[in-house]
Length: 300
Image (tube, rainbow, N blue to C red):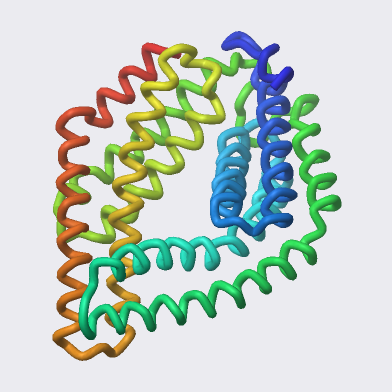
């Protein structure tokens, strides 16, 4: 945090990149240590988010580094992200199906109980695999490798990107945030069609990248950051819930349930998804992405 306090919008890009990435690296390994100790679902989630935010940091500041260094760093972090994915998805499925089972009756309830039991067994196996995988990755060596990359921006020779490493972080950030927002805006029209699940999935990913990028640069908007972050997170939450519901529906369809029971469960999931889409449409009307982008631009 002390490194972040010395950075302002006038700080040269190469200095800001080193400090901001170093902070992300510290957060990543702190959460890695905790998740490896507890395997608590929330700690797993926090580590997964931290790994994605760090990867976004390397993408954000790639222009200030040698391309091969950025690719090497991203590969190392991606290994952790992928290890965490299966367990996190199982945790989400368990939360949903357990909650649904509370209100279910009759044969549908019994089928849900079997789905829950199978996912509990799956989680135990995934936890063993994750424990082994994290140990094999060797956090100490991974941290040392990332630290070397972060400490070595392309300062004394022109970077292939052509970006001046002495440009201010504020000017650089404005361009890079607009780049992410443009991608979001291009995906919105298709995502407004409720049946276009793939478009909503692509938008979810684009919003997530925009959010992480803004979080890394959170010192620039100052007091405006909290409201901007809340607006973007609201989109990510509702799009994430819609995606989870699509995954849960797929799980049910692959169970081979009697058609009547499958219909009961899928109807419940479809109703919840329709409600989430209505929330998404409401966000678009009340807080359109164009307005968020304009607020970010003014805050910078």
